[in-house]
Image (spheres, rainbow, N blue to C red):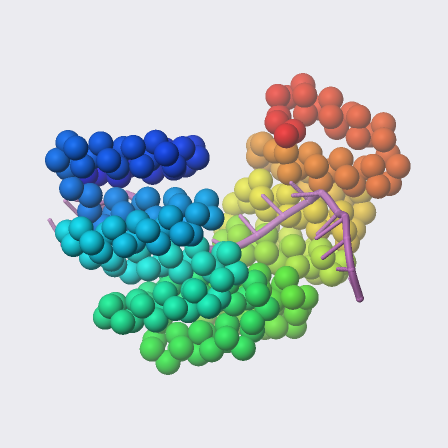
Length: 281
RNA sequence: CAGAUUCUCUCUUGGCA
């Protein structure tokens, strides 16, 4: 069963949902019964692909076969899928279903809800989830805070974002690379160059090791809020720390150079990428 | 009892207001 589940997951990750279904059927023929994880894996893949009706069909199959019951992971996948699609009504409906099944929402469930509300700008509802977490003594983790930070950041609510970040630090919840990415992104969009600088210093003084996404986020923040020199300093740091530039890096820098009319520098950048075999698409 | 599945971040900005 583990093997089949993993194979199905692999197929889904390469986008071959049909093969995943084939495997699922083959599994039946070989007399191996799918378990919750198998169903969860399949459903999650369809959900991520935006095939929400198919996902619900698989859910019905799971119920009909009766061999296994949906668990919190099942519900979380479904909730996440509808949340990502902006189908708040369906998401809430499935959240209801979770409690109707006698299951307890976990932190992941609540993070999914908050992310969906945040992305839809439904801050009252998002905050009510935060209150729910306090009331029932859920432990807010790094992802919880990252989700909140991103919600406020996207909305341009810098005050709220900073307050949230402050609480995060007070509660000793460890920031990770996503946290810094999120902050850089928000400050960049608001053209707050000094804030971007401050975040970068905090990152350097933390034990978080920057990944390509963080370097990219910092460069993009400086593209909007800073100077070419700012961007290049991050780029140098990226290379010195042996972090491989990717196509985000290229696009950001290329855009920055072009917007300043530095077409020749942009050409050099292209050459450098080609020489090093760094992907630019 | 443990092990496989679920949550957050970075370029690309068009259309309407």
